[in-house]
Length: 175
Picture 1 (tube, rainbow, N blue to C red):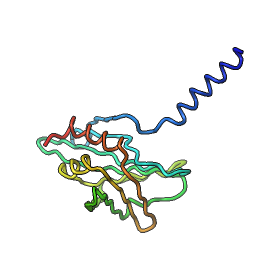
Picture 2 (cartoon, one colour; picture 1 turned 90 degrees about the horizontal axis):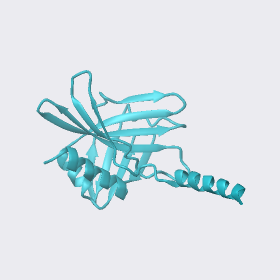
Picture 3 (cartoon, rainbow, N blue to C red; picture 1 turned 30 degrees about the vertical axis):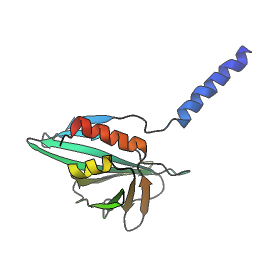
């Protein structure tokens, strides 16, 4: 009997780890930009709903950048895949449909980068206003469209994404 219980417990624990959602907790990374001394507070691991049977991950993180008395905000798209370039470095458009309203964001490409090892990892920065962040955080439906010349991705905010954004704003971005 003991020989049967131990493997069942191990399988149960492994099953819980496998089926636990990847984005269940609010996480902030605070760093200092060594080039200009700006303080960066970043909502990280904000994974948008995953495609079934896909090796693509799309994160829509939020960053607050404080330099002196100036505070700016950015969406940071982190896109990871093993099979194609998303090409967000060259041209990109980020569109959010927030309760039916159309919000379009552009990236100037200055802070964007791409890494390639065993997979492709692309990062793009989009300026966003504090009012837009509040509008998104208090929405009931947020669709995210990211398009380039070659590809088009559509993802949706879940309750976890909205809750994490609300928590970030309450802690770091007072109006």
